[in-house]
Length: 272
Image (cartoon, rainbow, N blue to C red; front, side, top):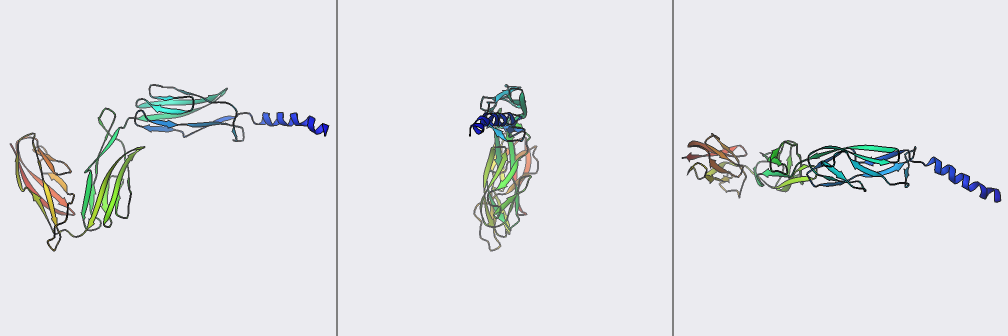
């Protein structure tokens, strides 16, 4: 028994030597933060030469460009401005570097803000998007699209919504954790005729006119609501937004065309 007890310190010492820190593991890496004043946390720990986590020691954190991203003693990152930095976690002679990119995005604006998609299954409408940075300036950034109920309507990678069956779904556009959303209500049915009101309108340069549409089924019944695709025959004279509001740009005449499921109607806009 006495020999066994005397051997214990040697065993403990050998175990301690075999469990010396050999590396630092940090996740996630690399890191991309979308938006300013956003927080993301890095987790890091020491491991031995076999990759087993160790409890010994506290990591030190540092950022190569603290004007881009800061890091505190717990590994919490906070974005400051757009750019790239390298965050380092260290312990004694060990260190690991994590590339960090900050992307200045502040909002995703979708138009139209809501959609009533009329027509047979497979009818499509494109969602327009504007991504802005913290200064309100439009920027070019890819958006990831999803539909909350793809059985009602799907959306493609370039933002085209396609109806599947009657119902309601939410279309979401994401950049990192930032998102914009719109509601899509699908009504499946044939459209025989489309009317646009007013058929003729007069505006001054700088003024606007809202055009409304009414869609009719083959039996003459009017559908409630309905989102049309609007186009101006001459954007130099007048522009028209997704809601059907036309704005006078220069004196002249332009046609405003509304289309739903391949059925169209036109109005005349006079600008003076």
